[in-house]
Image (cartoon, rainbow, N blue to C red; front, side):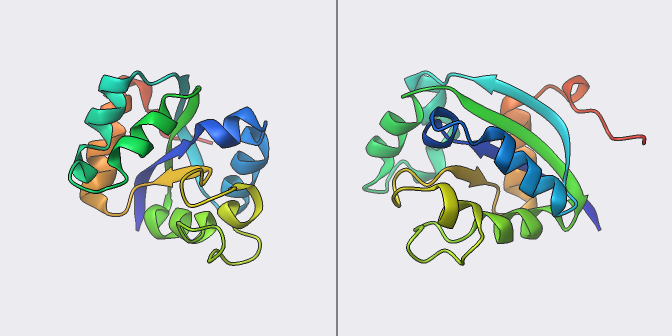
Length: 142
């Protein structure tokens, strides 16, 4: 089933120049970039995006980290895109991430873990619309 998911390459991975390597892994998994842009979140936007975690103890640190530099946001499309992307991302804590996953190879800690990915179809739709207008998403025709 073709679906879409959101990917964020976080400030740590952007700062360490891993954008191209991460996108190459996504494409090798059959995921297609249908929208992409680099943004530098301000505190308000980061708080809005991560509002679901507002009551969690890590919320403040997460917001502070996400505004430290630009991020690369992408809408990805493919068969079972949410699961496929989460598989290639690896576990949230890079120490627990399987060898060869993005987080195992590029993340430095559970707090600076290189990438974000939607965890459900509902959240994917909400997260993609947070960053992209419908006309900024271009289905691949070739």
